[in-house]
Image (cartoon, rainbow, N blue to C red; front, side, top):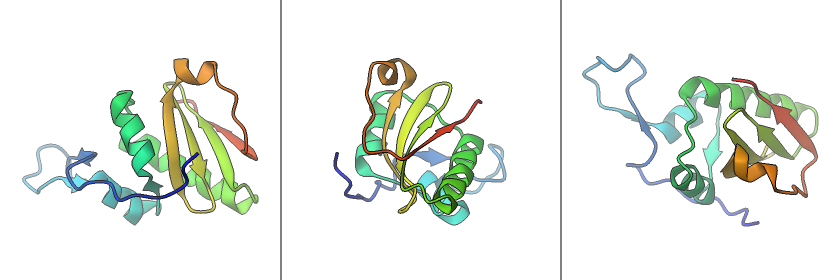
Length: 123
């Protein structure tokens, strides 16, 4: 597994401004929202997988992921599997980085190694 962290292009993963869709402000890049709110990073690999597999994770879900990663880090978990209704994410809690992502159907047939914690999130 490639643990290198790559910059996400500015045009990728954009969300409307925090004030809502009717705001006339320009969109805030999603990676900026994450880094400001939770300090989350998304590796280049994870970003590609999320786009390729059309995984939809809204802002509220990302906030929950960030909070759970903080809790996991406090408990000494370094590498974790986050299982959601529609996706599974491998995260490095120590570095606060999403390493890869897959949809639930794909994750069902996988064996996950080198993790020391699992986080279940029901949306």
